[in-house]
Amino acid sequence: MGHSNQQPPALAEPWRGPFARWPRVSDAVLAVAVFALALFVVDDANEGDLAIRSLGDVPPAAFLVFAVASAALLWRRSLPVVVFVVTVGATLLSTLLGYSQVVGVSFVIALYSVSGYSTGVRRAYFALGTAILVALSSLITDPEAGVGGVVFGVFFLTFIWYLGWRMRFRGERAAQIERQRPKLPELWPRSEPASRGNCTTSSPTG
Image 1 (cartoon, rainbow, N blue to C red):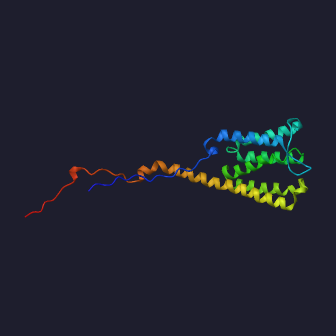
Image 2 (image 1 turned 135 degrees about the vertical axis):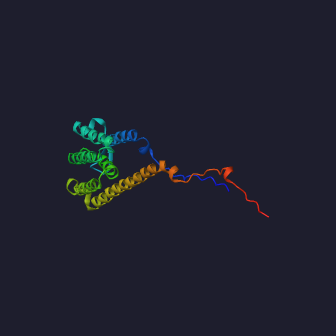
Image 3 (image 1 turned 90 degrees about the horizontal axis):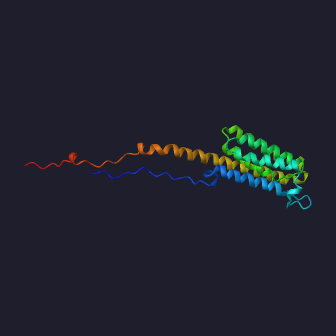
């Protein structure tokens, strides 16, 4: 009796977006987009909405702060904690000096990166605690924010941190699948065709 051909089970390939397929290019585009937002979009003090400003209205010091915060995102995977500290400082400085609060987008991205790419769990929790303190500091730096706005900010930052945390475990799961893939042919039983010499037939004796 021959053995049926058995194939090792196929492992599903995890979906990979552009940030996973082309990390360097994606981070560069992200840094440029954040820099452009911080440069040309400003809070309208009169109406409380966002407004577009010309390049000539940007103070030289603000240009430098925006450039540092945006360029730091290029290292958000390899140095997530350092990038987080830089973007927090740039966000607080920009808010206190009235340059633009939009630069805080870099701080939110850095928070996601620390949660998802940092090597230690304590660093991820450190980033979450710092982000909550930054949100609470809005009661001092921006009195118009109100308690409701601060509470929303805390929940929003916590949600961003949680997304990075989930991404961390998805990445670890994908790495585990890749480590198991070369071992599958050895673990799965190979089917070998039965040789004719081993197949004997017995005839009834009279």
